[in-house]
Length: 309
Image (cartoon, rainbow, N blue to C red):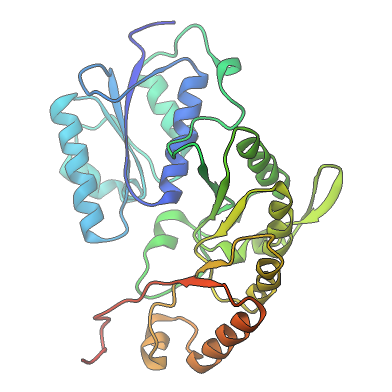
């Protein structure tokens, strides 16, 4: 292996971005590149950025600036990279700028500026790839993007519309993770409960049997792996109700992460979010009747335009 082929890596942002970083790092190691946690030991640095809110943008720009000061050779990727003009206006001397989940573009930029080592190490990589989480849990990303147009959210602009992964690929990755010792799978995406909508809930195969690309059937299949499965980033579609009996039966954890965003119907309408507050409260009551142990996690926006004290 060419010992000079060493990449530094900085990963910022949400769990979805972390999974992107894991995939890029896995490909780098598969091609024989070394990975360094030091600017001084790296030939170039990849910065995976976040561009969701102003504080995240500032943190990402600071990280790019620090990498340039300390190393000088920087490739920018991630959500902030979707606004390449903003990155290049601040740092015109970066080597390349790519958007989120642009794995091939990142690798192309690396190849252009740092030749690939002669001896790849694909066979030395574990089946689950490189993970940046502790060994007992891992993120399982099932789709990219979002089809909603919430007025406060820039994610569809940064990451595009919904693109679901084939369910056979998702289940194979889940099995690899469990076989590697992972005891908790955290299912993530921009809109987890919309999984399969873009591919019309296409039927795939897992262990020789058909399985639809739908969040309910995915949850049932994951429940067969014998580990904890936790659902994140759930939009409150009606079919989410079908997950609650699975929780009551112990197939998946009695936990839902549902960003409600607000409780006032008028503000919710302005946000372009579901505004049926009373109906949502009744659904939660019904969920608790079916699964008394259910835990709900949510986020709420304060100070939205038009909101009063």
